[in-house]
Image (cartoon, rainbow, N blue to C red; front, top):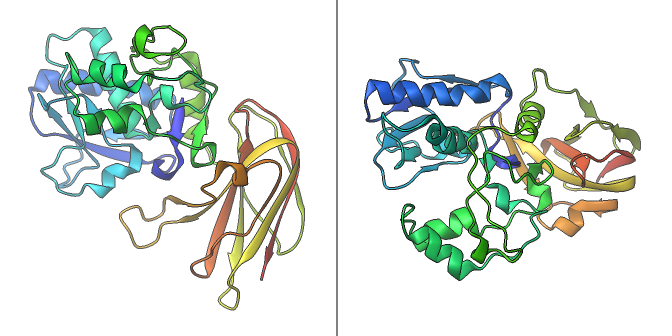
Length: 320
């Protein structure tokens, strides 16, 4: 399972949901299907907020099954524009179909991306055959929709991820002749055990402490649990303009710099800053000096290269 770091909602957030069309019976079935995420993630869906504007807006018979990714929903602020749409659901759809489509699309809505885009999915896809498959029945994707859904690259430093999981609810159908290992991948309709454990770690019942880093002072730390991340904070004062970040570990780790959105549609949410080169952001020894655009509070997220890995490391920030 893969979470888009930049489009993660805040833990414990309530997301408001509106149906643009469709029957009450269909609404109820989609709402019931979405609730499985609330069992494991510390998030809530409010389908009856009474507000004039909603975070997630659903339309049926809309050409394809699709959803905006996580907090990117907030970038689409036209209240008449859907952020989630369904082609394959109606009142008589099976429980399995509500899993394949409603649960899957709500996975996207809380920040998850397709499992075959996992950095450890090491099989080459035949773009021509896979595009032919998805532009035909029953998907009817455009070439641009194929590119966005099937062939995007995500570096490890800009995502959170579990081990690759072919049983994930976020796995996309891939026919055997479009995959270099000759294996067919199916679209699942239930959360896998890995899905449940990973999303609970991404949206925990309580957030871990953010550790303050004193300037030019080495801080020892440890990654002790599956999918664990350590978060640190430091200050760039108005008389400073840059910093050097160094980390040394007993095994490969991944590091990223972020801050918190201010006056924006995503106010109060994480905003990934750097590095964008995976090799610069990972390894047992990491040194980088990021571009700092303004003074303020900055954060570092550290996790293991292997999502179930363990590490002891030291980290330091020198501001100058």
